[in-house]
Image (cartoon, rainbow, N blue to C red; front, side, top):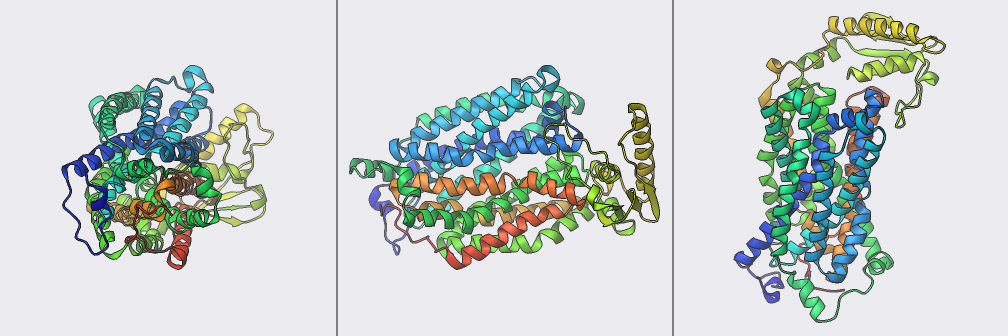
Length: 558
């Protein structure tokens, strides 16, 4: 293990080669965290199936959005996990705290694999699922800060960016591993069986990964910085009060959130999860094919976490993170438009040649999100927009009087109001309306699914890889920078909260917010306004107010 003297080498000193103990620290911390992210992201990778299995009592659009909300529930509680486990990490140590977190994560994931679905136990199924997601979120809230702090406190000066960049790869590698297991299971058993019950296998496999992770973490030693501080009797007695009750530390927490992690988070989730959902939901690319694309992009892009981590040791963390936020904000619209043309050229052609509009009285148009399945969307506008949203058709809404009409190129199709209709009348109207709109969309060239033969594989792969590289720019140096912003005595607590508010709330809610925007506006690209706005705010605040940290002495306690 590197000594305290080595770790505190001056700015001008040459970093010593990585010792075998340091390699073990990085490997053990990273591998355990990869498994934890694998557990957490299985749900996101299988969101469409989860919606059908556990939210079958809702309509299709609301079911998918609510499944994303359940996915987001794990992110929402992450800051609370950061407070609970961050405090424990600063009081009793890094090692034992994130041993507890991985146990909570692994057991919760296994239970999801054996949980009966909606058809078997009704509303209890989604309720239990959400509770399990909350437990996972609490566990993950304590995991990342511990792993990043643990590795950084073992790293010699001048190599913290390079060392902690390995921790930064774990979220992406966990997603990659989840995709590989899902693809392998899907391919081995066939789509029908996988949709029925095979989706449970990746969750059940997590119990083996849990056993490996616990064994690895049991063999790890406490970090030298924490051990030294504890020997000197300088540990914090009240980490929460010191971190958030004193303005000198609280203002740094706020800057770390707004000027770093919020923008980093939306770039991360846009480049990986939103891109996957966009391919499958908006562009109608086959889920297996979409997973292969994302997996390939992750495989190619992941080494750049290390590249930018190493580069941040030389030129600084801040310029790389700020550049990533700015470039992403400026290029998302053209990149996602190009993704449409490459992944589903028939759809892109139809959007250009036969644009769709809904002419309606806007006062009749509701925000169609029904989390409890009780709302009735009966107006002609609601019925028209709901059908187009279910068909993933890009459309604009135009103010008009009278009943709503759908305009597909030169074709005009009148909608209808469901108010006052009997069940049989409503079914007949609905069937006729769906057929007329479907025939018109087909005649205008709108495809029901992306044609595999027409997908430009190279271009789709290149775009997705570029999105992942944006992720590596903002994410590769972030752990080192957060560690360097706070003193050892409150580091675990202080860095965990802004990281998990940023990634748990700003990032974790991105798929839900973006798809709700798309469902409301009808434009499949409008969901991008959310990450663009957040990344832009982070760029402005970060450039103006956040200081560079690469030369900070992380052993300082004030």
